[in-house]
Image (cartoon, rainbow, N blue to C red; front, side, top):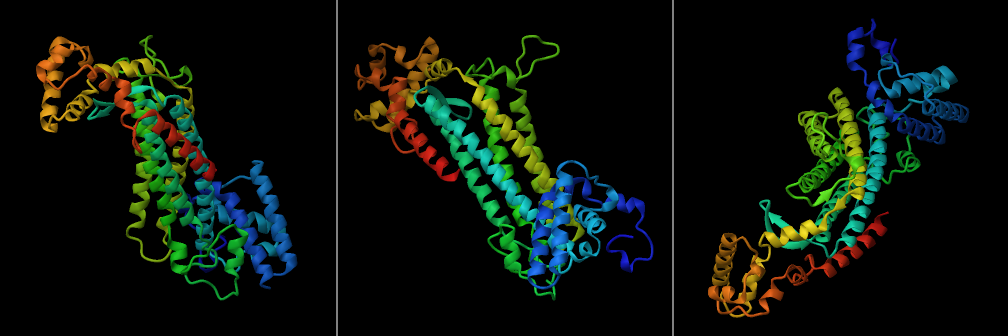
Amino acid sequence: MKLWGGRFEKETNQMVDDFHSSISFDKRLYPQDIRGSMAHAKMLCRQGIISAEDENAIRQGLAGILTDMQAGRVDFPAESEDIHMLVEQILTARVGDAGKRLHTGRSRNDQVATDMHLYAMDTCAQTLDMLLELEEVILDLAEKHAGDIMPGYTHLQRAQPITLGHHLMAYFEMFRRDCRRVQNARQSADCCPLGSGALAGTTYPLDREFTAAELGFSAVSRNSLDGVSDRDFLLDYLSAASIGMMHLSRFCEELVLWSSLEFGFLTLDDGFATGSSMMPQKKNPDVAELIRGKTGRVYGDLMALLTVMKGLPLAYNKDMQEDKENYFDARDTWLKCMHVFTEMLRTATFRVENMEKSAAAGFANATDCADYLVKRGVPFRDAHAVAGRLVAHCLEKGCALDDLALDELRAFSPAFEQDVYQAISMQACVSARNLIGGPAPERVLAAVSQGREWLKANK
């Protein structure tokens, strides 16, 4: 008979047991479940609800179960239904009636919610550590390549010259926002629902603040209905994971492009690429492609939980058991992708000479050519037209703007002087964009320095 089976006259159908059981995936919550039970038992004793002898037996029994589970000495049979029931069953078998008193003043509804809050806080801490490690790699690369010129793109067409360091720092900013979102998700999880009972609290004189403090929470849930039915804190993380994976995917898309022969901007370390079973020349960016592909999987986890929650009346409903597999999958996927991506980026070689050649060959200095004329009194629209005609002329000749002789330039506008060649050099084009957020090397280095200060403050 199940621990809850007092009002039932027959056993649950085996098919229902299999369908109903969640222990195959919620078994990973055993550390959080045991932590929560230890704190609950300590509070029950402190409040005079159970004896000190019972509390001591419970705590010793739970400590032994934790040790055995960590050592792999415990089976997780489907008939145990969930991790909460299994722990209680083992505890009762080991310590007798004291184990039966552990659940006093508690429901599985607030118990599982507490476990998930604890797990979510742990997950956010792990995620933040990995994001910060990735950010450190980006800062190192951005500092190294602060002055290395590459083409910046719009519409995947070469647009204006920037530096590789500037480009990398754009991703630093994306992942910095991801850090903030994870911190917000942790703050959402930092609220203890234990004491909410099934939905309406309990008549026992529980000290909820004490239990919350024992477990490392800074607050307790303010409404018992919301305490057991809230999964917003999981959605906050899934949202952060989806956006974070999108950022990884965008970066991976660029690494795939850059490592192609057509771009030639990047060489991936052999340890982070694969070959073809048929074509011996191939070096495929499979790691980057797989991260890009797994992004949709995390999006699906977010949408699945949003869909589960959208029509649920208060308070707890069995539908909410579906929160865990989505959350666990998104968490595992994001952390695994970040780990492999960080090492792939750390070991990649950027071919900066090809980047600079590409910037020069793509008329990335055409805007600077127009700006040069504007500074000599030519109206911008006229200057824009002159630069456009010069580009068309160069395309016909198969040359770059700075390959044209001064007489050729002056045939399009008498405002050109000898100093135009300095003004439209790639180095000058980048260095002139010396404003906050710009690609000038000194601005990139300043951004790196500020990034290191932020990193230090968040570690």
